[in-house]
Image (cartoon, rainbow, N blue to C red; front, side, top):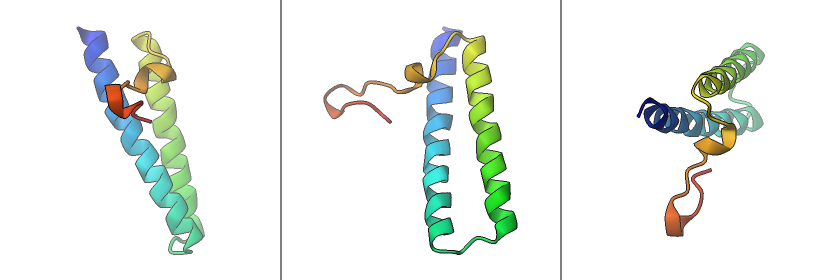
Length: 77
């Protein structure tokens, strides 16, 4: 049960991390972030990715386990 809950929570967090990463890239391309903001966002996203990976390892989850199969829609990410 704990592994299933961890998988769901980590999947949601990873999905949100990827959305934030895409948004940061768009803002960088539009030059609406300062150098300090770009660096801070980059570090925060890397740390979040590392944390997701570390928690996944504790529950025996690989990155592939976080890409849920949504049936006819396909994979989540």
